Picture 1 (tube, rainbow, N blue to C red):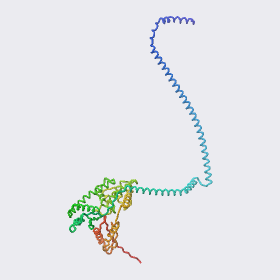
Picture 2 (picture 1 turned 90 degrees about the horizontal axis):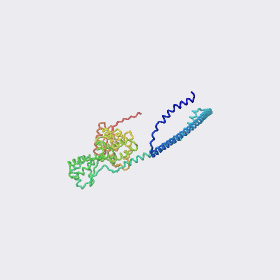
Picture 3 (picture 1 turned 45 degrees about the horizontal axis):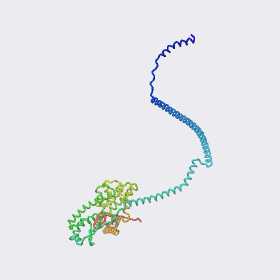
Picture 4 (picture 1 turned 90 degrees about the vertical axis):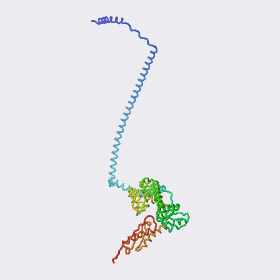
Length: 486
């Protein structure tokens, strides 16, 4: 079949289809859109197109920036590679130069060793020795200067600490001594105090243990080294003078009441002293003993005044020197408590130590009390501070008073009492009259007689003298036989 025949067939088949299409009914006309809606739709389409353009531009800008960064990074990488290559070449050059320098150094050292005839270590030691010799004198001079400067500064600092401590311890001072006086209203009162045949005055002296001196006109002088007895006698006598009933029975009653009242006063004074130095948990019996300081004097210095002053100084020193303040505080407060223990024998240091040991006081506090007169070597810085505070308080001008004539008379009387006995060769008073040593002739006094002599001298001292504390009597009998070979 030819090509034209094929075309005819195609057109023949297509005609009926065309007819069918021609007979298809036309679609219904589209509804008309309102102009306002159509305008809004167009606006939306325009906005969408604008937004699409904006996003496209931003994407293009971001792409451009990324492209630029990639180019910059590529350039930097290239520069870094160039630098690394340059540094590597420089490092190689430096290593070569170091090797060359080390080689030259070794050659020069070898030449020096050959020229000097010394090894490197020997040359090093020689140089160091010469340098040390040159500097030795300078070093010694500097060390000496440093020591001198440190000593001067330490002395200055020590003086400043002591002065500051004494400033903290400064308190008012009133001197009182071992004699009290009571004024009489008239001479008739003196006669009533003496009583018939002296019975009233004897009752007063027996009840109080104090000597009453009525020789001076208008006053009665009370004399005793025991200031508490003297105070009791003074108060009791004043009460009797006011009461008017002066007779032995009434005297004993008034003296007994006065003792009880004074015990309360002393406890209150001890409590005040403890609180003044910052101690609040001391047992009541120790507080009462400390209250006795109000009526106790050491070389004219009141013991409460001394203890308060010394404790303030000690606490100030301990604070400056970073020592244990509480140990120093108790050591200063209790260091002289043995002076008011009158019912036992011994020095005030030994009596105080025994008392504190019985009451379970810390060993550090006991050591401070035991060492404050250097009876034992100092065992701690706290002990030394207590010693210094006691010395500063007692040695300052005006702190203490002693009637030297009375003092010498007491020592002479002690020696004379002992020398008056048969068989005594020598007699010496020691420790400010607190001890008497009697040396006897062994040919005249045997061992039994020495014991009796010591008792006799003790009784005479108690009867004839007034003295503070106790007096220890020691009788020494020594037999010496000497022969000389010719």
